Structure formats: structure tokens, C-alpha cells
Length: 138
Picture 1 (cartoon, rainbow, N blue to C red):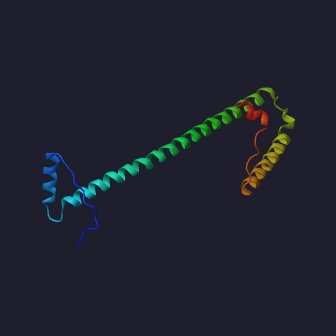
Picture 2: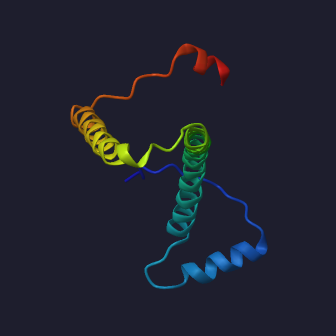
Picture 3: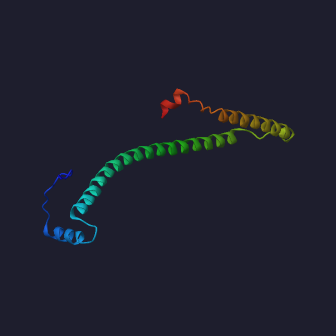
């Protein structure tokens, strides 16, 4: 009965032939099986290298996006810090007689702000885009 597997003639150096013969001498091993397994492993690794390259490209792109997000976050935090500093420098402290009413008003405004943000987050709304003038500055 003819074999359904194609036959291949290989020329191996003496050291490799000796090692193949020693391994094939073990029970359950054959030269064809050993060479087939080794070739399959090698070819599968070549496919894995292509996949690794594709994954590396994607990871590099994601890394660049993450770097830009971190940069933007640092800019936002620094901008907020500068705004708060400026606000404290130019805003005069209220007189003692108005302090209690101003605190109550500030608390009410803060609660309103938190509720508005909470509603927007719950509705899944995205923050509004910055004005075009700000985007052009980047």
C-alpha cells in the first residue's frame, strides 16, 4: 500500500546524524517522527514570530497613546494648579461678617456642581470638546 506522506531525502552532517540515530534508538521513537516534530516546531515558531511582530507593533502604538494621555493629564493638572494659585493671589479674603454666608453659598454651589457631574456620568455623556482655539494651540 503506497504511503500518503511524501518522501524526502535529507543530507545531515555526521554529528546531527549520530544524535538522531541515538534518539531514534529509544522505544517509540523514529527518525521520521523526530524530524517531523522538529520541523513542525521550527515552522510554528516562525509563525509565532510573525504574530509577535504584529503584537509588538500594536503594543508600540498603544504605548504611544498612553504616553500622550499621561502628558495631557500632567498638563491638565498643572493648569489647574496654576489657576488655583492665581485665584488665591487675586481674590481678597471676605470680611468676617460675610464668611458664614459665603461658606453656605459655596457649599450649595459645590453640591450643585457634584450633582451635575454625577448626572452626566450616569447618562454616559462625554465631556464637551475644548474650543477650537485651544485645540489649535496643541
